[in-house]
Image (spheres, rainbow, N blue to C red):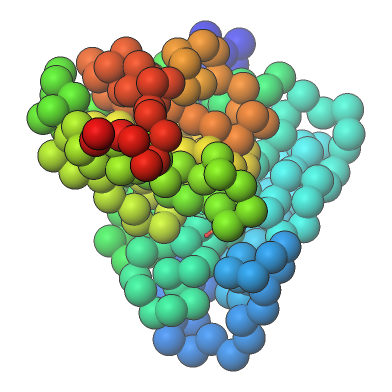
Length: 275
Ligand code: IPD
Ligand code: CA
Ligand code: CA
């Protein structure tokens, strides 16, 4: 439980909302008009002028309202007071590959950690015009209506979602085996290209579970608090407490958590899974 009063949490939630809506307006205005697409860390890891413009807008909002807080923003890295116990994790455009290709699946994500624990989150999807929000103890909403995870109990009845990190060609730990195995065990596994949308779709009850490796805090901090406030569960793959910096997350409706965890831990090597 957070040490913050509901009023204080609401103030932070309003800041998060202002930030994601300001960035979302940029994603909308610039849609279809990109002039600059570059590769960042490796081939396929893209950044556009919209990632940078949207991030600059978010930083302006945070500096105006909470100048004393630290910020971890995807395009700018770590900023601000190093001794603050508050840290914002910001993804100004989650789904850059989709956006750069004109595939309308992307979102803006702003989450606030207090002493390493997510306490507030807002995710705005300008293509669905959906604003997902939560703060600890205050519940989770989509466009201001309460949301809840699904009640699906059996893995064989689920629909899941996952993603593949940009380093997937450089490692055999690339999630390909898990993707095939879970496709076999469930009603389907989707890959949206936006981790923030994936985890909040679990919060909305549209998807029963999400897992991914190779992700960053800005991809998931907002989604974690939104999902847990919607009744979901987040852990490491093996069910142990989640370490946000580990880059690995298992996020479900709670009901299928153990069975999905078991399947992930027991995934056979790719060549042998159906032999
Ligand atoms: C990516 C998306 C994608 C996930 C990648 C992320 P970006 O973020 O969330 O779904 O599979 O691991 O890096 O680069 O579009 O902000
Ligand atoms: Ca991202
Ligand atoms: Ca991004």
